[in-house]
Amino acid sequence: MLVSRLGEHRYALLFAGFLSLLVLALGAFLTLSVVPRQEREWRRIERYPELDRNGYVAARDGDYVVITGYLQDNPTRTRYELVAYRVDEWTVSRNEDGDGEGRWHAVEVNVPPLAISLPGGVVKTAAVNSLALSGQVHEFIERGYSRRQAPYAGRSLPDGSLRTRGFRNRDLVTAAGRKTATGDLQPERLHAGDRSGLVAHLRSNVGALRIFGIVMLVIASLPLLAIIVWIARDRYVARKPAR
Image (cartoon, rainbow, N blue to C red):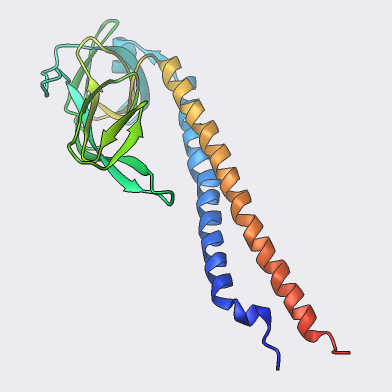
């Protein structure tokens, strides 16, 4: 009695099908959820007026607002004279070729209340535990001592290296978020630069994520299509009468 090829490779097919569905789901999530959400964000920031102090005061509690101004008279929080910052640690692992691959993961985020000077006065932001930082922020690297290393920004960094990124007084920043009942701005995003730079940054991210999501959908669809064709052919051969 002949054993079908489908039976011989059942577990391999199931595993390949599971991985393909996983990649397909991730690609669909990026394309149908993450990309539209970020696209709505940059379009909203581009559409909203850039407020001065009087315009901000006139906004209602809960309104989404966008302001651009200079950080002013904020206490420094690090030896790098940063007034708000994020610290990431460099983790190095080995890929299939045995080369080092590095990833940053957050170990500390410190975004206290900040004073931003606008035309007509100052706006205060509320402290937050998590915030998207973008633009040309100040960056400082403390190298680790591990022998495991991976490339970053044109140099090799040891595992355990620390990256501190943040803002200083007199930096031009664009803050986007909602006005609270206390009159402070609850920031959702803080960008080093003006609003046009923030919009360009978000638009670039949207384009990259859209391409990545589509590529994942295509890559996941091909194995699934091959599995379906293989199963259909196997069943056809099994039902075909022997001569």
